[in-house]
Structures are given as C-alpha cells and as structure tokens.
Image (cartoon, rainbow, N blue to C red; front, side, top):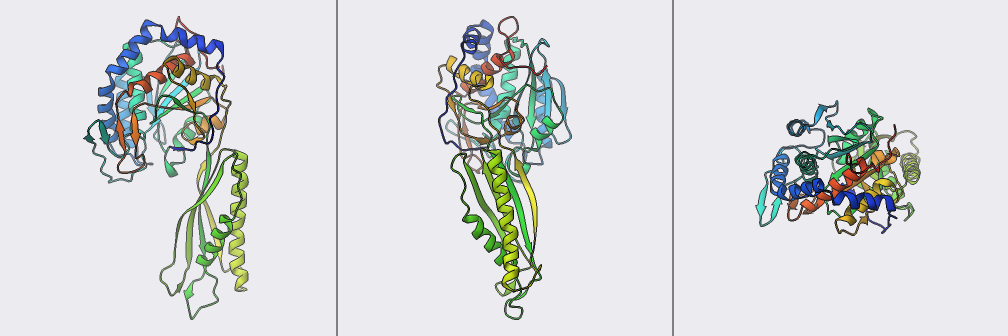
Length: 423
C-alpha cells in the first residue's frame, strides 16, 4: 500500500444517508455485532499472527490462500473458490434484491521467501514482517464475517468475501485485475488495509514502471575507446529524465530507482539497466509522462551513437513491469458518503485521504464505487523487518467497516441499500 496525502477534501452527507446510519446504529442486532467485535479483538489478533506466519511473497501466496479459504468455509461462506491467479473468494448471500459488494484484503507481502515472519510481542505490540500490511486486513475480513454470523445479520445485497493476490510491488494488482476481468456483476468494492477508522481512501494513484536495458558491443576501455557505451547512454537518459517538469496538481512524479551494468572499471559495458517508476493521480498526466520518458530514453541511445558516429551500436529494450491505472470518484459518491457517515455515527471525524495505490485502483478506474478502509489498531514500520501492530482498541476499525457494509448493502427488514445496483 502506498499513500500520498495532498489535501483535505470533504464529503457532503445527504439526509438519506445520515438517517440510514442513525437507524442502523440503534438496532439491537448491530449493537450485538459491535459487542462481539470488541470481545473478539484478542482472538482476531491471534488469527492475524497465524496468517502472518505463513510466508506469502508476491506470486507465492498459495499456502496462505489455502489457509484463508479453509477459514472462509468454516465460517459458512458459500462457493469458496480459488481462481487461476490465486484469488480466494466466496459469497455470503443476501435477500437477492440488492447490490453485490466485495469485501477483501490482500494475501501477499513485500518480503521474499526465507524472511523470518515469526511474531514476537513487546508490550502491547506484535512485531512481524507483514503483521499489519496486510495481516490486519485479512484478520479484519474474518472477524467481520464472524460478527455477521454471531448477530444473525441478514443483508439485502450479497457480500463477495475473500482475498486477492499480487497487490504489492511488481504484483501489479494482478489479483484485482483478474477479479474484474472475470466478473461484470460487482456494484461496489471495499479493500481493508492497516490504518485508523477515521480515514477513507477513495482516489487511485496510477503508476507505470519500466525496466530499460541499453545494449552495445562493449570492449576494452583503452583499446576500444570510441565504442558507444550503454552506461553512458543510460547516464544521458537519467540526466534528461531528471530535468523533466511535471505538474504539482494533479500530483505527478518520476524516479529512477535501480541501475545496474558493467563488468569492470576498464571495460566498456555491454549492457546497462535501470528500473523507472512514474506515478500520477491523473491517468492522462501519467500517460503523457510515460510518452515523454520513453522518448527521452530512445533519444539518449541515439545521442550516444551520434557522439561516436556509429549508428545503431547502442540499442534499447523497454519492458513494462508495472501498470496500475489512476482513478478518481466524487467525494460525494454514495460509497464515500457511507464510509464517512458510518464514522460520524461512531463519533469519528472522517478524513478523506489523498490518492493511494491499493486494490481499489482497479474498480475506481473502471467507474465502480470503491474505498480502502483501515482495519483499526496502531501500526508502524510497514514494509520493514520491524513492522508492528498494536491491537489496542482495534475493534473500532472493524466496527466502522461493518457499519459501512450494512449501510451500502442494506440490513434486511430495516434499511434499503445505499449502493446503486447495476441490475
């Protein structure tokens, strides 16, 4: 998960939505579910540890996916299936007359195979790589299902419940991309990440990443002097990219994150590589930046060849290794209003976050209402070996998510769905 905050937009709450959450929070069944979530907090933390201690590097989520699937089945989720990329999803059916809402977290972590993921406790904190991102999300999904079952809450709309793969890094959101490529019946989407209950992510920061390889004949630095150098071409490219002007709003960025090449100090390299990251909150600006950067890379190869008057000595290969689309939706959309109103009903001041790169990018880009919400508790050190999670009052996060869910899909015989249905 990556977040960039650059403003404090607000959502205007409609009277209909405020009244719906006022009704929901007064229901005995909802209060029962809230009490259960608070009582279930310690158990949820233990389950979070259990899931975290199963290694799940991006593209290697199978073992954790099997465990998560078993847990969903044990909780009565129907038709639990694992798709071709490793996503695990099932359904908790409503009355059949409402929208379909996805509730999910992601299985993968940023840590490579062999990382020590054994949890340790220090005071109120639990330390383990992946314990928060996205161990908290996975555990939140499960405790919410338990609360729905315990309080016998029947929704109007269906809940599509599960976990995705490939959310992190070069996973490139392959899980959620595959989910939406194979389904056209999803009306809304909630992904759960670590974070406090007052924050709502509703914008998707897009990114494009390229591995760039310059290639040439190479040779001895003295004997073959005058042979165009891939490393020199790479240097020219980096210099040109570094001088680019990009807009502050919509926020647009670039970074040369990795470079590699050469064999010795007295060798003209045969290859030089770099990996470039480009991001924007605007899909149009992202595509403009992509065009400029790729053009500058080709110009750099041509400039190195011209310098030594040896046409085509340096060639360049471009491999796109990441493509996360940007997306935006109105802060006044039903899903954003519902998440905000649920928080207000619980006494939180809702904060609309800046654009993030999460599973919600894909549905937002496709025009499907989506938010990413925090599972509660305190966390820190995400994506480091010192990542930690503190479960103190973490139940507030999942209470807020549960209330948001009930508002969006409706509580049978109590409230109608706030989420529009595509049917």
